Amino acid sequence: MKTKRKLSRYALARRLHYLALQISVGKPVKIGSKSIQIPDHVVVEEELEICLGEVDLELEVHWPSQAPKRYRQKSVPTHGKPRVAGSAL
Image (cartoon, rainbow, N blue to C red):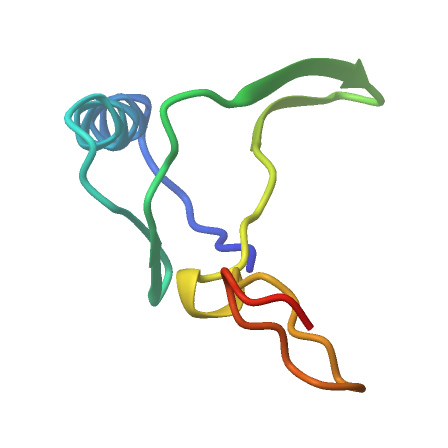
């Protein structure tokens, strides 16, 4: 989800400061209508492009996504008799 808006340099600094504070204390960050929790360790890419009279400063933050806990279960065999711990089958 991309969001685009015009800001003054001061408003940009305030927005970045707000995001930095949210991230530093472990609170969710809201982008557009969605919010996300930033993990303790991330990969950050910084890029500065200057071409044809336009300057792009890009900051990208990446981390692996994890399935919600309800989906992170050990696989259960789908065939044969179920195994019971401690029994000899």
